[in-house]
Length: 502
Image 1 (cartoon, rainbow, N blue to C red):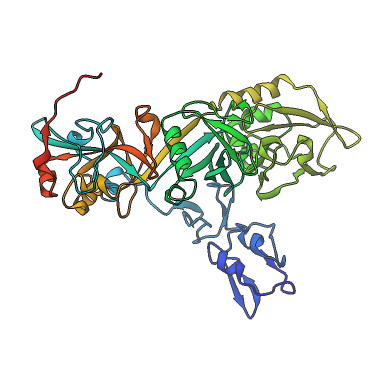
Image 2 (cartoon, one colour; image 1 turned 90 degrees about the vertical axis):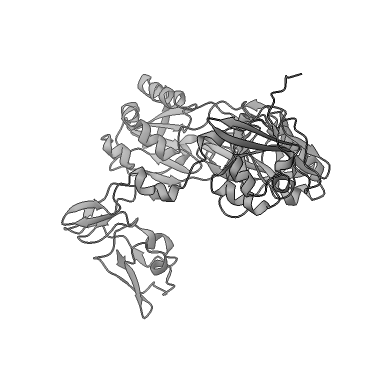
């Protein structure tokens, strides 16, 4: 890296953000230590006064790391920007050794014993513990493999509860923080996006105890019970969500979720894409990929095309996209508009450009002419084959949901006279928490906050009450000796007798 000391204002951002401490500030003048510098480009991105310039010549004794798109230049004895690799006498060495499971066993912690992994009975149809000090409605025991096992069940009302709805789609559903409505009543908000999915958070104690609490409780319950629910997103579409089915967005059923971001799609299908066109651009609202500059394209022997895109380039061939109603969820309506410039000295007459999205459902093929303009041409067989490969690798668009809640009151007091002992037993894997028989994931830290995949719970098992709260079937299963030790309500315990369904 080189520094224009006249432009440097001594803000310190380059020193603060540099991952390998390659930059120091001396009397408000940035000094680059070439031996430490990895050419990662962080200082270039944070410099507001454009005082830092990229060096073009790689030091003779450095190694170019290919473990990620940054491609650090690591000098002898130094580490890369991620601190995973070091140059030791001209060889890249991974600093952390490969760990076996035995190496991490203590950190991973114990799993519940096999005899307590499944409840003796579920809490579905069990009734509720109320008030809190009353024993749970069903405390049953069973002998398994010579071990006495106890399951305590209750349908517990939970004010601290919500549901995270995962919508697998490449269609924009709004911005983070946008409110979600049922009718005109606010029930949740749009959260972040995951790989090919939009995350909607509905409910939570503040909404349940607010002015729209009744409709919030009903909405969470209906989604958990896999019923279709109509939602409206602020600054976004109307949609119908039903767990297990495709989302219906502004009246149209979703078809595909992305196979990966634009960069990942480039990496997955580079050999096919190199055959499909001279240049391939995969439009994506997060990371748009360009084959000729991307490391995957170079690996597949793509030739330089002289094309640069309008989006900001993160690393070569990977561009941060924007959000909109166009191709790949970007603002680009006409795909050829993504091209910002073409170096006519590199481009050639007849050069082809294929533009598509991360689902491969849309695509256009263009040709660069002698007039230095692009014109659309019919899709070739090889281009069509590449789009089909991307599309066929995409999973169907669908809705799933995770119910999340905190069990603080009757869900513990109805189990034992000493609630703190139950909490500790759950975290120590001595008591197994299940929801309608399905294993729950207990969040670390204090209390019993759990999550469960609602598709693994029998339909119709969730309810709501106008307190308002949602009602969840909850079971705790443990060995009898541990139940007695925690002060369990052994006086209310009964042998389990299977009940015939009505």
